[in-house]
Amino acid sequence: NAGVMQNPRHLVRRRGQEARLRCSPVKGHSHVYWYRQLPEEGLKFMVYLQKENIIDESGMPKERFSAEFPKEGPSILRIQQVVRGDSAAYFCASSPPDRDGETQYFGPGTRLLVL
Amino acid sequence: KQEVTQIPAALSVPEGENLVLNCSFTDSAIYNLQWFRQDPGKGLTSLLLIQSSQREQTSGRLNASLDKSSGRSTLYIAASQPGDSATYLCAVRGRTSGTYKYIFGTGTRLKVLA
Image (cartoon, rainbow over the protein chains, first blue to last red):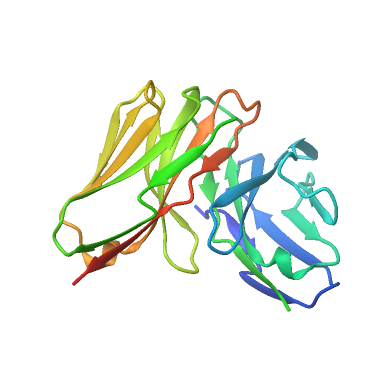
């Protein structure tokens, strides 16, 4: 069984470019979460999605960031017009249809470097 | 609002020592608590998951306890080894947040000296 897959693992962008981060959840999982880890900081929740729905985006920056989880294909975290402060590790996690106590399975992360 | 604190922020010990990492959280209404290991530049490795109804979990040299009423968890590492050197993260999954996100502590950076 494949775990959560994220690609690319490393991404370099120049200021002003767009970054697209992809997350393929564990097979059968319909819930996806994105977290961001800034340098020397802990992981912070960004957004929680179910298929075709954004459930909680309370951790998403108000501008330039968007996320989707279409009916088919991976979840995408999109960052427009990147700035140096966007440099971080972005982790995706997935879980099955929620049950009390169910855990989330984390991917290996995408490390974004903005030059 | 749930807040998770980990103490100490960093720890350096000689090989062979038993050690305790601490995690505290402000809202005791949780689904579960999980301990992770993170190596530099790497992803998260799940170590132990404790459900809200449980008091402790064990895996090899690791033992994690949970005291919901006091908002505390400890990770006990027996007979530490240089390979245990990493950052250890505590995360809680809350009931009252309205969603099912994890709230992470900032971690304890452990260095085990040979």
